[in-house]
Image (tube, rainbow, N blue to C red; front, top):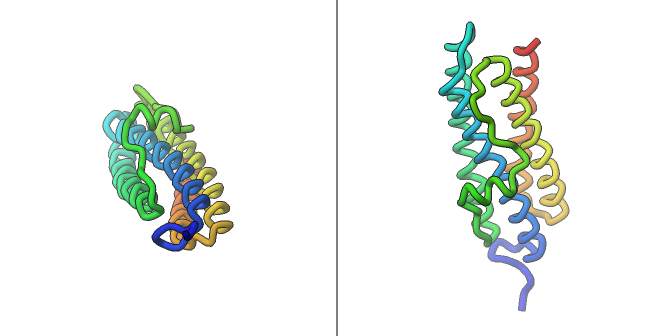
Length: 157
């Protein structure tokens, strides 16, 4: 009997990765809703610019949510799909009634920083497990989000 899953990864490693990816999925979901809220509720001098930028971010986050869930399935596990689970697993906290443009941007920066930290942890686990698929996926996310953080911090001055 083999101790590997359908894509040739050690079953224990795949299980550990799926668990961390589910935590990542939960953080993505809460962050996605926060950014949707920023998009809907932002006010101030930079409304048009930020409203459009937040839509770009939440559209990208939604695509990544699907990709993370599909990676969990590829590893042979089930993605969590209830908000009660997301609240338990997420380090990113729900943001309510944020409408000041600068506060919204700071919330986006903090959200991306949390995602990057989690993704670096997953990248290390994936490397140890010889899981190129997961490593490549989160590596791409990290690269994109680091640039986004740099740009948002430049915006904040």
